[in-house]
Length: 395
Ligand code: GLA
View 1 (cartoon, protein in one colour):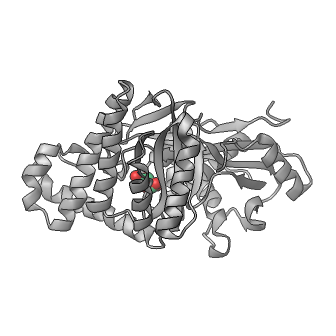
View 2: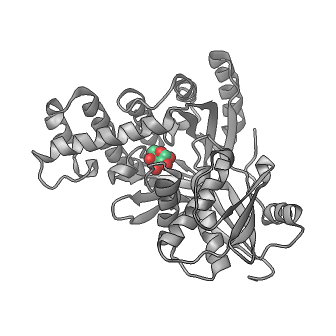
View 3: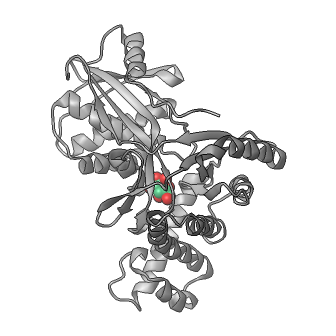
């Protein structure tokens, strides 16, 4: 079991010094996130309830003369260099695409990005559904902001990071991950309206810890299946809008309207829409449950979210189902479901603080027995969002 140790400023500074023999003049850190409930609702303009975690990605850099960027991926032991223009993805160093994507998004807005040499390191598990890529993008925006001396609001930081992912990296994600990384707060989850981008914080019920279990499984079809789900939701909106004027996204459809219009939808589209409409309603109910300390209700809602993702949205997999089925009967577990896009990745569990050790042992041995695989356990603290790290130049 790994304990939650936030990536220290010293780690990225040391990494930069090791790679370049110099001290950095700017540095930034951004956290990954775990989503408590509200899955596949963000791109349907609905509600989500993520929390930034105490693990993330950090970058440190120095400006260099000329037009060439040099990047060092400390954790991969790899480096690459590329010109400011044209910025192109490179499958040989695909880890650099996120950095390039941010430079591309800033340049597209007419913001000049200084050429630099940068080191990147992180302590958030990659490919585990914890948004390491959003953390990397958000930290890169902050890094450029410091190097270039321009000002952006946290909202602009999140929007630029998402633009990098959508327009350059080519993943059609919603805005949840970047918003959580930019706006996280210590001890709190973030209720986010993905249409208005209005935010409220929601405290984690006292005595509960967020325990993430990484299934160790990642399906290669995740990205194409994700895009298929988006298209199926859009088809549902087109059909329902003909009898519900004013509906422009699934966010606008109430559960009663969904039930009434269900027969008009093709079976697959019906299931996808039913998940999104019901999940949106569950987010509001979960916030009420959390605020009133009703953990029994919270557990029921998280379990219903998982069933809906498994049966209607079809983004779970046997390994995630095993993890949830192992967690739900445990009396000290007050919620368990898959978190993030699905198709592998992790589950999120709300566990009584003094039972975290027992929970972890039970899950690890049960998972090994039922799947033959090793589960990786992370206990996360909901944490503050992205920040610039002080350097000799910025202090
Ligand atoms: C991924 C995407 C998010 C969101 C989730 C599913 O994490 O990046 O925008 O759609 O999947 O809730």
